Length: 293
Image (cartoon, rainbow, N blue to C red; front, side):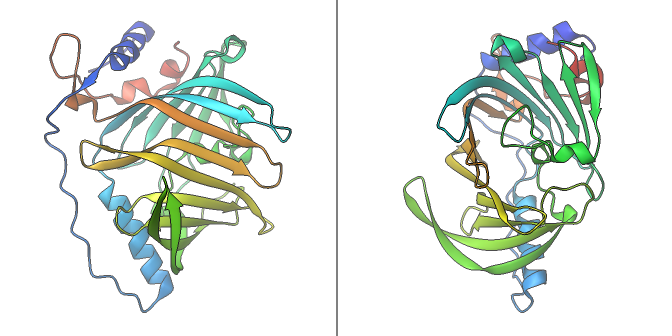
């Protein structure tokens, strides 16, 4: 599907919202076999764990989600926003657009991200009030995304090639009311213009999904914790959290993103005409697409 106009892009979003998942999830890549890990070196072990988790999650092609975002300040006062996000998987890095749909004062504000494994990601911000697209410089990627506890840096996925890894040990967490055994991994960014000295990622041993991520600032102090919960097993192949809670330990603010609609691989869903949908394309992740409503 080669979408060239904003009207076509808008119609795509409308159709996605009315979709019902197909009963058959065909053409999905098989789960790669679990290798025999070398546990003698915590660096090699941690790197192997991170890369295998990435390989298990590959092949979903594209994604669409509709979410409610709740921002809570240190006094406990909250505001809510509605967002939509499109993501296109790519071997040379994923592409994504996150757009605010409400309230009225920020409706249409959107961020576009092009990821570059092993390099600096590109980000752009569209502000409807000025009708201009502004490039987010490397230094500004560490700033808050529209007042949330997520930064522009956080809008990019965690690519194993952008970090050095270390296995810190094994642990247990309570997730959705159940005890989960996890690998505790240390990830230190190797790219420039990061706001973090390191991340601690708690990876499920059984399901290979990140249950919790702790972020440390450049001074080595605990900054934020991202907790993922209410997981969905989409197409009986991929795990996705429908609730993401980012808590800032230094400002005592919190942002919670709760998804009400979540789709992976659009070709596995049917439209109103009963026919399979088409996957998203690169044309929907351009500066022109960023300016569309």
